[in-house]
Image 1: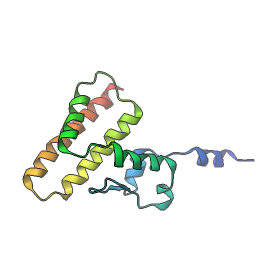
Image 2: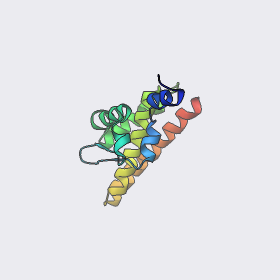
Image 3: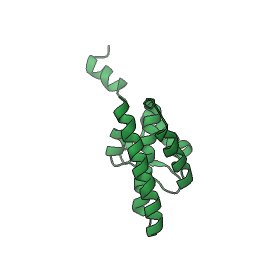
Image 4: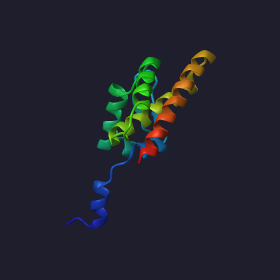
Length: 127
């Protein structure tokens, strides 16, 4: 028989924020999620986030601008999955800006980073 504590441990799934706070990085080349904690990296929820990073996240400046435009026109809160994808995109862009050497590129990505942050902030205020 499974105790209440064991049942909670079995049902626990980390949020995207918990995964990121564990020191997770998003590889800029292959857009892979790099989770330093092996136990955390093995969880099903983290595997789902890896697929999002590799296949769903916008990877170019124009793709991110399109996302920001879509988010800025929303009149209802994001679904949870969309919120998580947007947070991952925000982290990806933050890490991208930190790796850039060109001031022009840093400025362009930094501007879209702030626009995405503002769109996410607006979404949080819907709730």
